[in-house]
Image (cartoon, rainbow, N blue to C red; front, side, top):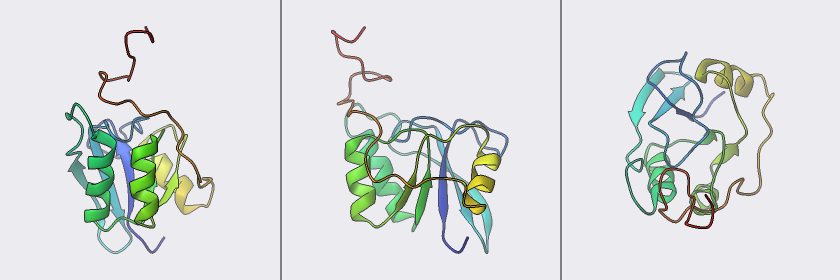
Length: 131
């Protein structure tokens, strides 16, 4: 593995589901080959605007080299790409199974954002026309 890997998570354990939302996930579980794993609360989760940017900046500040998540918006994608972070998306299952898939080379790296920007319109990004 060699580098720090962050998985977006709904909870604080390896049995927690991978959170499909990167910017608004509850936690990041950070894996380090030499230090095991640790749980970090997502600082961007409660922001009205800029959750993806804040979460991506937090990932960079933690020295993470790869992210495993469900979807990435364009702002988070840009920040992570500029920081040289590998991004693996459309991941499901538990955090533990996602990290095993990463270790086994079973995940495909993305070169684009996988969801539209949400611009602070509630937890699911639906504006008045999107309901």
